[in-house]
Length: 215
Image 1 (cartoon, one colour):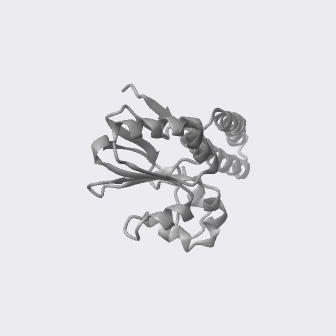
Image 2 (cartoon, rainbow, N blue to C red):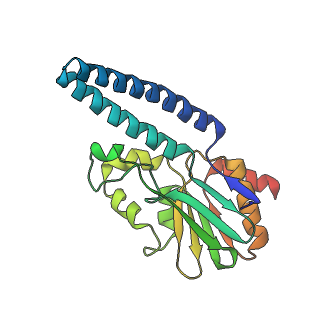
Image 3 (cartoon, rainbow, N blue to C red):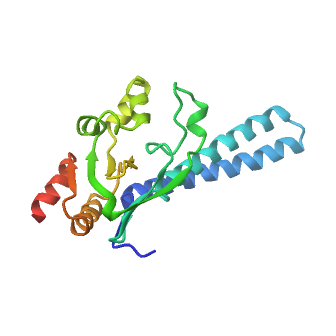
């Protein structure tokens, strides 16, 4: 599909992810080789530790790939596409309580498509901004749960989200933390052009400034 606008994380952030993926991936391969060698010399304890390190490292690599490549927002002028993690927030499983193991379980990616004529409003900003501008029914359930969990508080404070409200109540939200804001601005321009009367609310200062300059 050809898009008029497609936005994902900034190139610099993606490069940082790629560096981390390369480093940890190399360590994983080393751990695999050492694990096989340990088995060959019947050192089963070291083989177990190397195998565990390999599994955890591989999980980290998958999560980092999950974090920087498959998620995006896009539009072709007729519909809006959100490719997001299933939980909408993190590339790994989010437990009800702090859980070390869950941090190494990659989250599934899913794609949602919304027809342009069904869009009622687009809200972009922090968790608190969403909470302030959405009704209790609209505010995402997972954010409601995490709001009560201090373990995630500092992480959520640094995150930005997009929430697309539809006229048929099939709303959709996802994290756009570290996304290219210039691209987000272009994305919103396409929505405004093709969806007359749409309400757009933003509280990301840099993005607000970009839109004010264009006006």
